[in-house]
Length: 275
Image 1 (tube, helix red, strand yellow):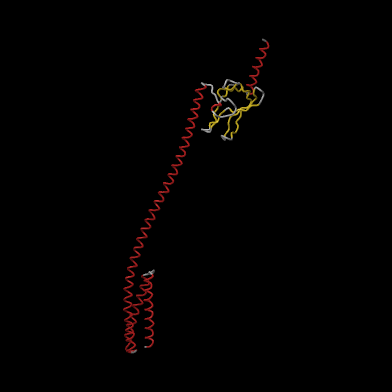
Image 2 (cartoon, helix red, strand yellow; image 1 turned 30 degrees about the vertical axis):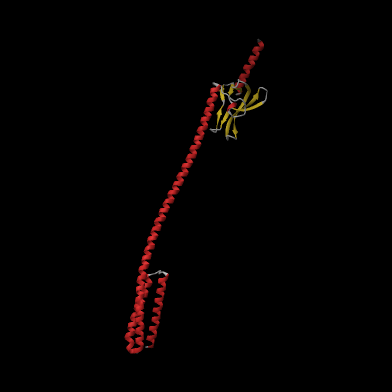
């Protein structure tokens, strides 16, 4: 009796030591197997999930150091879920069957174990479906943004086409007006050239007549020729201002008329110099 009481006191003293130091006995929910005494609990970085997770370290019943997570990775949500079934100042009960592994077979939960596991499996599936829905929604939003972008680009292209059509129509109207103006100026210039040809013939006649009758009698004739030359010069100046950019054919005709006028002026100067 005395020995049992002494042993019991040792157990009570050991529990007090656990409480005072913050150590806890780690027990598995699968058969309530004792893992050992967890002496340290801390957050450890997990490179796979890229975040911290809760890990306990301690000494097992064989005196060896153990290390075990108190959570499990939920890859559907990207979070760590606690696997601590219950905890007191002396004990921690974990749903893990082994320290490693994140699949469902490595966990057993205390409350109605089978239905609880089924519920957790369903919960994980729901979370996976929710994650899939969120992913699809994100893709849908991305597609909607692309659709809006291309719609804006299409509307911009349509507006540009309308602008180009409007500008093209304006250019066609302007080209038509220019052609009409050129036709008008051509007709007008040809009419003036005809007058110039008639005047040229008249001047040659007057110059020939002046040469025949002599200096004194030819003065009136020369005055007439001088007036006709003045008229031709005015016609030339008028046409130069009328058509600043004539077409090639019309420009050639104007050049010929100017050359004939210059030849007539030289002839006139020669006749008047002789007289």
